[in-house]
Length: 160
Image (tube, rainbow, N blue to C red):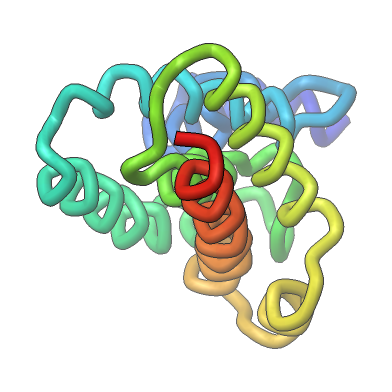
């Protein structure tokens, strides 16, 4: 089946390993949510860096993601397969920019980001439907991350 094909491609092409979030995107249930968990680990690793460095790494990952996700989607012959979760990982990095990295804040950011990524309010859903290729795969998650970031920054302003 296609899942077997994706698992084989995961090991044959390193770009697929990244696109599938080191295999988390191959989860039969909620691959985007499992993929976003890789983002939690990355946020935790990047949080000690200066904000400008964190932003720079996130921007580089976004740009790389256009290629990584686009190439993987082409290789497996799908427009935006659920198994590709690199976009969710980067979107979560955006959501948590300059947000406290403690258990409650990570959990809140994770939930808020996943709500925007799944719900896809305008313009997220519009972008998801209208922009194709690797850019399209990455762009809707970037905007979902920006929406979640706004919520998290507002919460931080009110609570901290």
